[in-house]
Length: 466
Image (cartoon, rainbow, N blue to C red):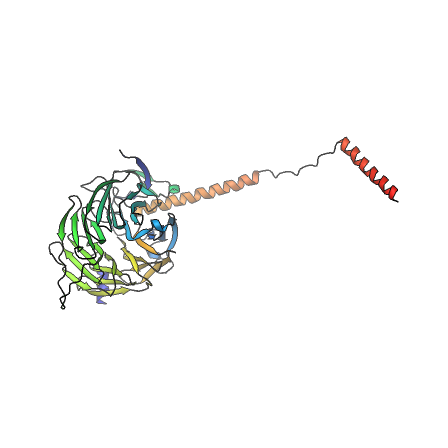
């Protein structure tokens, strides 16, 4: 009861792209289901390079496990262009934080990294590629993050880290013009026209030897990374200056005098700490908390018995959610440093988890091909949907209430137009004349005489036989 109550309290070519971007610049208050009927949308990626969208009617509709339905799919199946596990990241503000209301940040954009050594930015509403399509990063990606314009930067920034330990930074110019309610036939409800230049490589630098996990925060200015093997422990870089600003010391040896080599498998910046604190999950099922003011981890506790694959935190940073490759999803109380609860239902390793930026919801995706949505307070599974393929990543597609209302209105108009068009087609079909039967052509006099001669010849032949 104590844990549950605690959790509850807690020269470029320009391409014109339309986006279902919010035109509401109000404050980011928690949305309550009401007249707008705000929907819940999820974008899942898989090993064949496809993107699928699952959708539910709203938060109040959750409770039945069949509330989510898969209603869109983009891309062509190709294992060579499969999306790397965990390399699926929603657009963030250039000043840090997930965006749902801002007009100038990439709300509704999704950054993905593929096996063919490319990274790409996708518009979640339409599945269209932004910024001229995929960009080459020169190696197999292990992490990708996307940031919009900020107070210190006008354009967008895409940061990718490869297995070889190279950090690649791409930038593009951005301009947004409010256009009201877009055209639903283009997959757009309400929002803006986005003029996005092609991505261009801004910088490339070495960060680590054998990278396994990395994350970018601070609006694209801070990069943390870690890998496997000696010399690949946790480091933090300044992306602008391309230099190390923090390097952690390894944990002390155990009672046998053995010090395990680094094995960093998951990382996550703690919101509200200005990138000074972050979580690290290891292959030895250890959860560590780092503070750049301390050389060693300030917290080091075991979680489960398997490799940690994904980390998230709730809205007040009181609970850390830890997923591993054995299908376990735990809630860890950061204050008491003890296991708070466990989410049940998974049948395979979990690739990625994602917390809804406004609602009390967390979603998981993994090897069992089921997408599951849980309540963070009750730990109950509120919805699930079978996604047909082994998933590699999952993210929430969050839009503002104004966008949802305008989208519903545009959808209603589009349905009305379809009905009118169909009725008009039926009327036109009824008005068409029924084709008349073809009249038999009259035989000419010459044909009649020839027919009579044939009959006469037959009669003569019959008389001779008789």
